[in-house]
Image (cartoon, rainbow over the protein chains, first blue to last red):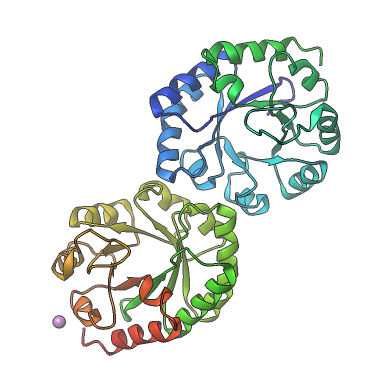
Length: 209
Length: 209
Ligand code: NI
């Protein structure tokens, strides 16, 4: 991920058929998403593989990247830009050597300690959150912008903020020194994914940070 | 797989904790199982990885092999002997190049056509079944020994018979020219897995075929 431009990752919400997913992803990358992370928990490998192949042309055409959540083998099979590891995925240190050196291996962290460990184990980037209250994590208290700042200061790899980020609180997030943000519902659940992505993109491009 | 000795694969039934699984696997390989296929459908990668590491020492000590069901990435991470692909796994042609040349890529087939296709796509071996009525596939009619014979004659890669095979019908199965058999409950659900595996081993070693 470039340091020159804030990164916008859009994570799929795993409830879509191929045609619908294609439309949303196509809109997201046209609107300015840099990366689509295909997440479809407990889906069979074949379904994930098929969806990845379905959305790859739109992603490639826009010059964006594709990350596969959890399945290193699917990421390899579709020659994705990388894999994103979650808490119950393969350990980073085991997954990293399976990927090509130029492929990304990211992971989700929830504390400074996890962030430092992920970097030490070879993570290419981390996502940290959730920053604000979000429907994806009901009941769990948000971690807030100040703890995000601590994570950013604790590691040298890119940190993406996740959780409840909107165009209205985005500038505050960007003030922490993050490399970018990851969103799910803010784009996936919007009636106009392209417009939703573009609005986030515009805030990022216009940021004073 | 050697042509010189009938192969005995034991597939785990995915309902075990690590300690219990270790005891059963240890018994199975001591009793003469050549391969343990770790199958644990829809388990998180981390759980499969942890179980694979837990049972590997017993398998290695007995000179047996470990196959991972479905997850090519876990098979690579634990340096397993190979991977076994099911209907909803990655396609053989996509999975084969991800594995080392000396690692096995097997798959389940249910017809002569699927067998021929699997061989053409690069499968190292196939399992065919179910041969006899089995609790694992209630309601589905068994495919029988004659269709097994047709599959064996249609391909050059090793064919393992699966489904309802016991020490009592084993000699009939071996008469078809199979490379061996794969069992689940016959070993996993036996009160004495080591004895159960040894009884199958003895029939195979004493076979006139
Ligand atoms: Ni004969």
